[in-house]
Amino acid sequence: MITLSRSDLLAPLRSVASVVDRRGSMPVLSTILLHATHGTLVLRGTDLEVEVTASLPLDFDGDWATCIPARKFLDIVKAAPDDAQVTIKPDTDRVQVKIGRGRYAMSVLDAESFPAVDKGDAPYEAEIAASALRDVIGHAAYAMAQNDVRYYLNGLLLQLDGKVLRAVATDGGRLAVSERDVQIGGTMDAIIPRKAVTELAKMLTAHDGEVVVRWSENFVEFVMDGISFLSKVIEGRFPDWQRVMPEAPTNCRADRLELKGALHRTAILSNEKFKGLKISLTRDHMALSASNPERDTAEESLDVGYTGNDLELGINVAFLLDAVSTIESEDVQLGFTNDQTAVLIADPDSQQDRHIVMPMRV
Image (cartoon, rainbow, N blue to C red):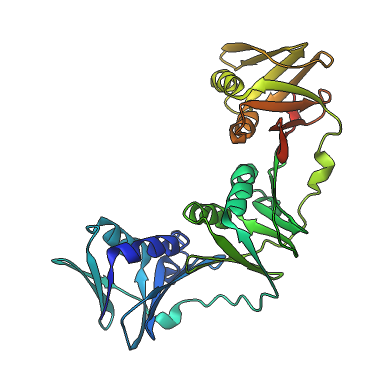
């Protein structure tokens, strides 16, 4: 029998349960492995692509392991009072969980059936500030593809190049690049699956220290706060993102909140399928217009800082709005070359985060 406080158990349990397979492809993948041994409770969850392992100190001298239903166990612990003690008692084919006066019995699976992810050796290791990882993922991950046949686009390219940490994502119609300076050496070039990126981002929000990163050709591991987050790497060659960066565009500077509001309103009456928006630029002026098959129309007009040639182009308003929403400064800079070239969106005072949206016919 093992006993832990609900406050100590909940956070690591939530992290581990977040990656279990809910599709039911294999019953054991919907469980969490609990292994109590030598004064430590190890919790492990996996979907064979991502694995999360958490360890907690425990007053227990034996050796016991089982696979408990992840969602049911997590929901019971979440619903318990904040100051509750959680007692887990193994049985033959069930586990007895006691919380206060409550008694809960759940069917379990044999611990030997839990899949062991063979990550092999990780010959490379570095310590990276959680804030740097959180920033690059947060500013680039939105551009990842979903269920694209080009499987390498359904993830995030994470690079460590000298002293620069970089995240790159694209779905073919847009691209996001985010960079932060880091005081470490080493090189890494890994495409991390979409699910792993999403769950890692959640974990990083609660961590402000250093993250130990280990990697090999097949896996990347992130270790923080006693939790190991292991992800397979997507095989494939990521597109040469530097080739689509426009060279020497004419910059347009706009108030970020004003532009964001205008894009939101215009998008309401755009074509629901194609989300087309027409941008017209003249000196110090931007006009936005959209329409849909129901013959609804929307027009917006903004004062901007622009001294280039008159220009008119079509663009996906949802893509442009996503990019503008990641900018945190008061103003936003949009770089235009011509009506056939990608639009560059960035902070006017920094090139750490760059966003590309390809033009479209409207």
